[in-house]
Amino acid sequence: MHMVRGRLAPSPTGYMHIGNAWAFLLAWLAARHEGGQVVLRMEDIDPQRSRPEYALALMEDLRWLGLDWDEGSDIGGQYAPYTQHERLPLYQEALQSLQKRGLAYPCFCTRKELRSLAGAPHWGDAGAAYPGTCRGLSAAERQAKLAAGRKPALRLLCPSEPISFNDALYGAQQCCLHDIGGDFALCRSDGVVAYQLAVAVDDYAMGITQVVRGQDILVSTPRQIALLRLLGAESIPQYGHIALLVDEQGERLAKRHSSLAIRYIRQQGMTARQLVGLLACWAGLQAQPVPRSAAELIPLFSWQRLVRHRLSVPSDLPSLRAACGLCTG
Ligand code: GLU
Image 1 (cartoon, rainbow, N blue to C red):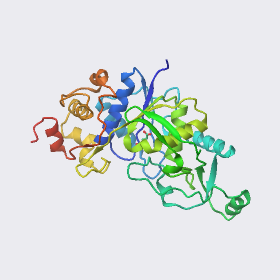
Image 2 (spheres, rainbow, N blue to C red; image 1 turned 45 degrees about the horizontal axis):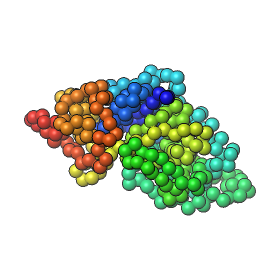
Image 3 (tube, rainbow, N blue to C red; image 1 turned 135 degrees about the horizontal axis):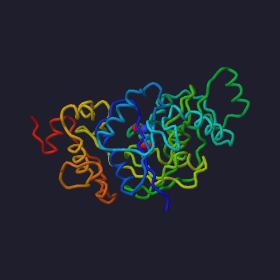
Image 4 (cartoon, helix red, strand yellow; image 1 turned 120 degrees about the horizontal axis):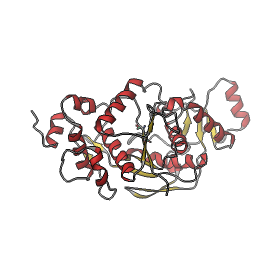
């Protein structure tokens, strides 16, 4: 049997908050519970939003939580580099190969959603389906647009057969890419590579066998599976999409919830054991928010026990401390 290889794939676009910590803890536990390896990949292809200081802060926060990795952007490893902006030639190679095989085509439409495609689309981000405008352009029409100075994006010619996979938490999934937006963008007209392409290239190239991430990214998984297959992957990873944490208004926890930033919580005196114990209790891995280290939770991890529904959690520190059974003063 092959070794499980999981990954932590943060985007260094802000400080880590509780929602990220929750996803990273569960991804780490899923891999370590199987005796697997953990890869840290820095997903910084969005040039407008990624900052090196956030990457450093993310690693510091991961270590504070007690999460470690066997290969990664700071320590290297067999599949280095592990920072996406250093992997651009690999993405270019994949794009060229897809285009050469007629599996990707230039798209001259200027669409708003192309602006944000370097970030993972999250819950509520789904744009309108691409109507396929540039799919059928003739070689002459493409040439004419290029000659007129138009810079194209690149889209995948989506396969029409349904994509199925078995999610570790939500079971059998099946969908047709045409029902979830159709031909999706692989690269922006200014050359910025899309999240979907970078993730598929990297998961394949880094031998990732287990992908654990938030349920909001489940909608991207069929796209990534289609790409993995077209890139030549013989097997696809085991996917597990975990329930989202939301605030009292039902909004996904995000970097704007600055009071839930891990470094703020830490500065205010909460310990990693307290936070990890609370996250494990929310996850269903222990009945009470007993303080625990991440390593102590490895034997307790089980997909069967994990919570499946969205969890509304406190979005301020006093309520968080109260949830841990700590004095709020
Ligand atoms: N870098 C992505 C994010 O932070 C996660 C991508 C993934 O796990 O596939 O949203």
